[in-house]
Image (cartoon, rainbow, N blue to C red; front, side, top):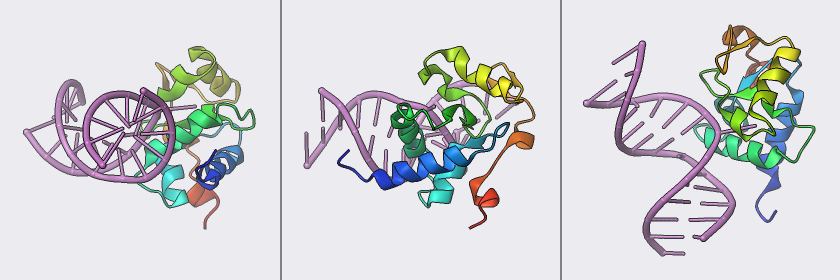
Length: 111
DNA sequence: AGCATGACGAACA
DNA sequence: GTGTTCGCCATGC
């Protein structure tokens, strides 16, 4: 890891802070970290976070509340399964009542 | 150094 | 409301 682990570390930490039964978005994390607009980097971090078992990436979805990253999990059905296990209803690869389950670091951590 | 890609997002047609 | 394009920043070839 020659590059700054800082950015990745921050993403991991935020994701780790996501309470069970809650979800957040890539953009929200990126915005909170200051790299707003670069939601891709968050996704990239998640990809690296794959090795971090302490990083519940299944709680991170896109702005639409859709489980876009499920394809990158050990099993595509794993992500939805975990979410439903935590009380988050998922329908057609999308979180039901997404706004209700949304956990925004910028709000929860409130600067 | 340049081109292609990516777990996204917003703007535009 | 759906489909397409551009922008973001970093990694890989």
